Length: 266
Image (tube, rainbow, N blue to C red):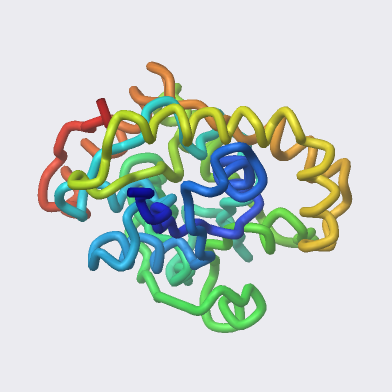
């Protein structure tokens, strides 16, 4: 009997597209049913069993039980990432009120770690819908992520790339997102399907870039450089070292209940 397609939730942010584009267009497309969600919603659906797999904010692996990680794949950056930015009206050490986007959980945790360990400040943190103008109307600085950050200029404002700041503090890359699968359906045969689909996407990069330019309105050259120069889609030992350190620091600051080891599908 043919198995039903694996239900997978993905993020339509440009930085995640190569991780799922091949699942839609490539040779394994019949194995997956893809839905598009914001990053927090991907995690919530995976937690509730609404989907079997998802591209989740990396911090959510520590918060959702019984997950396995697809080896070798991630949304990571050695910095600059260009799409996760702290935008401020004043020097960062002078920030008193900071608006945190509600559309990201990993970037919020990263911001809290950097504020505490790198900048050593404790501003008031205000959850806010991701609208830079209204964020800066009431706060000194704002966390902006995703395609809006990539597509915008910020004249007269101080802009801190958080992947660069993490690299300056730790010497390591930062992992923003992962493919995670519920343990009960995480069979080894899924791994080559995910991995080969990512390879397929990058092998068809010109087609992917053309489609994403139409969808986002961003210039093709910007998309190509972003996906090939700023984002690293691998999860090798150096990226894993950065991820494990992130988990350790998040736990030390009370952002997670514990720092559990990363378990891969095997």
